[in-house]
Structures are given as structure tokens and as C-alpha cells.
Length: 605
Image (tube, rainbow, N blue to C red; front, side):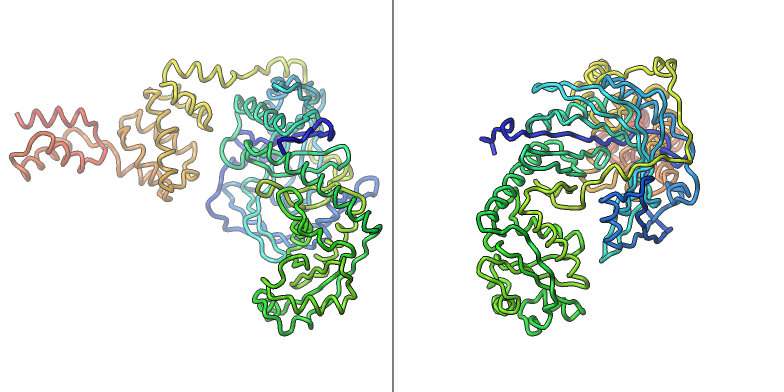
């Protein structure tokens, strides 16, 4: 859509950047920030919607409640406790996380509030055991600059991260709790962004600023929610977007989707469609002898098939609607209930369903301009009803809703939440912010300044890669703590870990504590620098650090001399390089090469 004039369309975009903070423990308990490999403990729950203090229900929460799903929470005592399970009251707000959030506020030019109140935000999609997420507004105002203009900062909040889903089956979703409660800073911009490219640039600018502070790095540590609207359309929130370079394409796609929906609205008006009333009906009997393999298998498993007619929609289902057809767009509403749809505008011969749809057209009294949809499953009527409700909105234009990033575009997930979902947290007292506390918060060095400093002790490329990695802070700690060449430590974090990833090793199993102990052993001379890569590889495979390090302990001079003499006795008459190769193979990195060469020369002499 390079020829689109976004200013004429009245494009408005706002970003919500969510970034995990690299604190020592979670936001409301003392559990460490740790990814568990196993989850031996499980809890099963159902969540219910409750009204706000004014007696009103949040539309997004009500929608999730009506889906009637069951949630399984899998956890490990090493990374979660009774606070995450909602069995124990939350502890006081993590001061380290609050300090980092106020630091970010200063960098953005935000005004920090005098008093901070923790709020509960109703979330019953299963991502929080309690049915709500705790959040606290810390700063307001502020701005960032882009080459295309200033972007205002609406608010900066500190909140607890949600639990990620790890499996889904029918109406049951399993979540892991090691991420639940991880401190998360949320930066929300004003809807000042006026083009797809400016959206990408603004997200990049905020991301660069955040990387100057103590934040988590890696996949899933930063996520963007993008609010998009055009003047004749509606506000759409696209959640869970992680690929910075694709933000421009996502915004452009949403604009194209809304323009297509407005064209469909006009076409329905020309066809005389003023209202859409479609009710699903059971048509299982029509498919008793179907040749469609998928439907036949579903029927054998006890599924029912429902159908309904959308009056005046024939031919519209194949229209392009952003990155997918309008039929696929409607299918997203059925998918929200765990079902798919097949509709009459598709190639029915390919699905071997031509005969069944001819029968359905007669049975449902469908006209030439009507389109028939079917869905199969345990409760397909609910899925088709959701499609019917969405189709009814086509005559008014673009509905406001929350969508989830899906490829280059997005798909429907639930209605937009309202103000009803927020209410005060009664278990945590308000925190006062003094002038002295704010003045004590210093601004961190920028990425450019950090790179400049590192270039004094590291090769330029290595310095830049280290600053952009999540190990910069740990590098600085270890460099100050141990007398090891900076290049050695930096090379492990940049080169060694990259090599291990390329070879398929699970480097996520290596913790900061592992690095701390390994470099302590190097500093003490108990393991050689060359052994670090081998030890890390064993940790990736699940080995205990003590056992892995024991295999590579540096040998004593006495034992090393015995090895050298033994090799010379076994293989007399070889050259010095040949002996070096044999000795190094036996030593396996547990002794310095220079020392071995010196002792070998002495023995040969």
C-alpha cells in the first residue's frame, strides 16, 4: 500500500511496549526470575467474571467467562510460590523494579506520581491464576523523538507479567507459572503516530532506550500491543507483537483490512441488506454419507454439524481483507470457540461437498445472493452464533475489538476491554514517592556511551555485540569481580553461546549463577579458559555444574609431567608437534598449552 495517503485516512496509532525487568526476584514475592525445565506440580481451576464496584461487567472479561474454559496451572517450587497460586497474599512491591521504572520515567521525561497505588486489572483468559493482573501507574507525560515528529508518552506503569500457555486441548488450556509475576514495565504512547513507518521507528526508539537500562533480553522479553484506527473505521488493539521490523507491515495491513470492511459495508447497502439475522441449525443428517474425509472422521467421533445462511453475502467471502479473505476473517470468530467453518463461496468440488451444499440450499431456503456456512464439532452452534453476530456488524462498518498478531496480519481474539476491569488492590498499601528518592535516581549510560567505553578494552565488533546482548550487565559484574581478561569473558557471552545455539544446544539452561561459578573457577586456576565452552555444552545437555567442572579440573604439574613421560614412552621417536597433539588429547583442556609445550621440551631434552 505504498500509494496510500495515511494523513487523508486519519490514521492514528498508539503503542504499548511491555518489557521484562532484570530484577533479582518477582514483583510481589521473593521467587527468582528463572525458567524452569520441569513442572511437577499442577492446579486445575475455572475463573468467573465479577462486576465492578459500580455493578458493571467488563465486556472482555464477560466474553472470556462465557467461553467456559478450564485452566491447568503447572509450576515448580524453584520458580513459583503460593503468591502466584493465589493462596498467599502478595508481598510489598519490589523496590528494585520500582527504581528501574522510575529511572525509565526520567529518561522519557515523565512526571512520577507522588503516591503509587496498586490496582487489579480483571483478566480471566487464564493467564493469571487469580483472575486479575496487578499494575501500578508510576509516571505520566513525557515524549520521544522520531525523524517524523514527536510522540507523546501517555503513561508508564509497572505490572506483573502473565503466564504463557503451553498446551491447548478442546476447552482446556495449560499454563506455566514461572513467568507469572515477573516485573514488567509498560510504556504507552499517545495516538500521535501517523504512518506505519513512524510506528516502527517509535517502537525502535523506545526499545533502544530500554536496552540502556537493566532489562531482560531474548525472545518474549519485550512485546508490543499496537492500537490502530482510521477516521471512518474503528480502534483495533493488536496484542502480542514481537517482530520490530514487521510493525510497519502490520499497521499497513490493518488499514487495508478496515478499508476492505468499509467497502463490504457499502456493497451490502447496495444489495439492500440492512440487518443480518442468522440462526444456526443442526444439519448433521445431510452429511450422513459425506465423502469429505475430515467431516466423516468428525462424525465418527460423535461431532454434530450445524449450518446457517448469511443473506446477501454471496461472493463477498472471497474478497481480500488485508492479508486474508473476508471468509478467513469471519472464520477467526469461530476459531475463538475452537471451531472452523466451511462456506459456500469456496471451491466445494475440492472438498467433495457440492452435493451437500445443494441440499442445504434447499433445506435452508437460501437464495442466489446468500452464502451458507457450516461448522462441525461438539458445540458448533456457539461458534456459528459468534460468526453471525460479527456478520451483523458488517452493515455498520468496522467493530472495535482486540486481535492477536498472526503472520503479517492479525485475527480476532475478544472484545476491547473497558474501564470496568480496574479496581483497587486492597492487600498492598500505597507507596509515597519523596523528592529525595527521585533525586537519588540517576540516568544510565546510553547504548552509544556503553559501546564507546567497551571499545577501549574489546575489539569494536565484539563490544557492539556484547552491548546488544542480554549479558552486558553480567559481563560488567564479572569483569570487576575476577581478574580475567575482558576479551575472554566477552567472547564466551558472544561467540561461545552463539556457536552453541547454532549447534542446537539449549543455552537457556545456563543461568547467571552458572557463569558466576565457572568464571570463579577460572580465576582460581581450577579450570582452564579453553574448558569453558565444553563445560557450557554439558550444562546445555542437563549436566550438573559440579560434575561438568570436575571433568575439566586443571591437572597438577606433577600429574602433567607423568602424562608427558607416559606418551613419550608409548610413542618414541615422534616430533614435538605430534607429541603435543597426543598430550592435549589426554589433557582435554585441563592445562595451559604453553605450560605443556615448555614441560615437553624439557623432557625431550
